[in-house]
Amino acid sequence: MKGKNRIGLWIIGVASIVVVGIIVLVVVTSRTPVSSEAHANIPTEWINGNELGSPDAPVVMVAYEDFLCPHCGEFNRNAKARLIEDFIEAGDLRLVYMFFPLDIFAPASYNAARAGQCIIDLSDDPNGFWQYHDTLFFGERGASRYEIENLTTLARDAGVNEREFVECFGLVATQDKVDQSVRAGVADGAQGTPHILINDEVFAGNAANYDAIRAAVNAALVAVE
Image 1 (cartoon, rainbow, N blue to C red):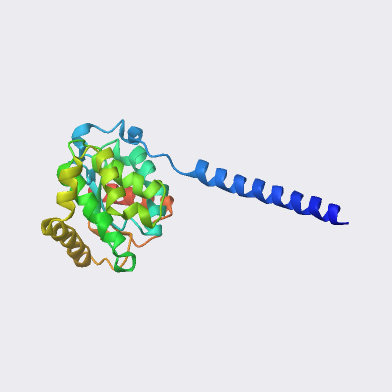
Image 2 (tube, rainbow, N blue to C red):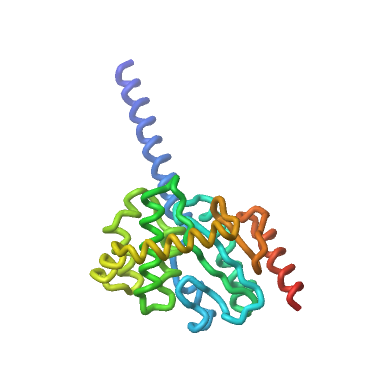
């Protein structure tokens, strides 16, 4: 009986390992890959720091977001690539990312925002900020992701000098720029994230529902014709 019990426990143990392995495989393979290929059909001059799209686009979408906000992650996973394909590449829409770090996620939320601002200020790569943006929203997550060491690595990957990034990260002026973005969000009615405006009109729908976002953009296009 003891031998049978050992065999049973061994089978259960192996099965548990297999299940865990499958779960890990699913999580790893289900991550959205981070790639600048999504911007391949967008003219370089249409990519300017935290702005993506033609400067002459008739519709402007301003998104106040927090890099740690799960709903912001859903919005980006569901909408960003499709907005690019449906509207941005055609010159109909310009997407503007605005920092709106939430106190509930502090200090990581403010670290991520300051790092993003430094990449805007320092990167020579037009895609630098958006590479950073997509890495934080689509890549691995966790508290260590927002520590200065890892944020410095992300900045280097975005083409920023490490020494200059660390200096920028600690500047009061950098935090002031983030605070200015927050104040602009409050003035625009933001109380949480994502807070989205389409041609200055607050989008009141579900940001994770791309059909609703697409309908709102199309309505704005019709209104400016």
